[in-house]
Image (cartoon, rainbow, N blue to C red; front, side, top):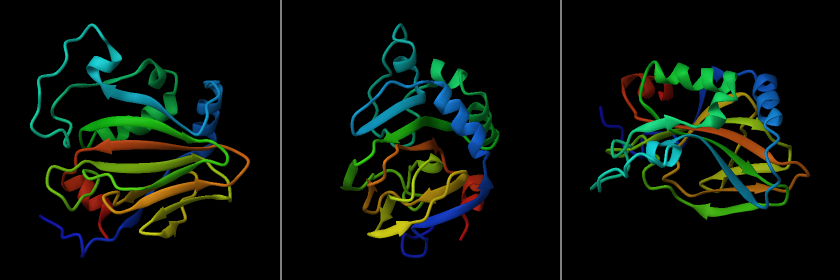
Amino acid sequence: METTKQAMLDRVKLPLTFDVQKMAEEVQALNLERFVYYDVQPLRSPAHFVDPSLPLPPPADDYADGSWTDWKNTILLEKLPYIHEIMKGFQEHTKVNLVRLLRLSPGAVVKEHTDPTLGLHIEKSVVRLTIPILTNDETVFYLNRKPVDMKPGQCWYLRLTDPHMIENHGATERINLTLDMIPNDWVRSLIKN
């Protein structure tokens, strides 16, 4: 079932919510080191990044769908039992590849860009779901130059092949959990619009 870009919404709030307090407590308990601007904490990564003793994967013609490597949980994910449970809930339905915590420091801006493989409407795509954990009223995520009103604990599909940017004009960092997964019938039905 192929969905055209024109027919699909660029943002969909999914009918899922997660316990913000549990997620925030787990993330804060990590005592992650200070950072400047933007920080990525991998929770699930290509296997050879998690275990350097593993051989590099063979060259691939197409990296978009994640089949070019095996994926492993990082040590950091094992310290986050509730977030690990969230990921496993998605793994019951589809293959979950990359899982990360994305942190944006106060005053930082991620300039407008596109991610060419992160859209349900393209072949061999990966779907990224975003769950805000910590944010402030002055952090705005723009998709197609329109704000997306994402609240902590909500789960969103965003068509990231379209132009998007983030501005954090608040005094606190913004932290989102992102989960990249292979779209299948279950994922498509979850994102239906």
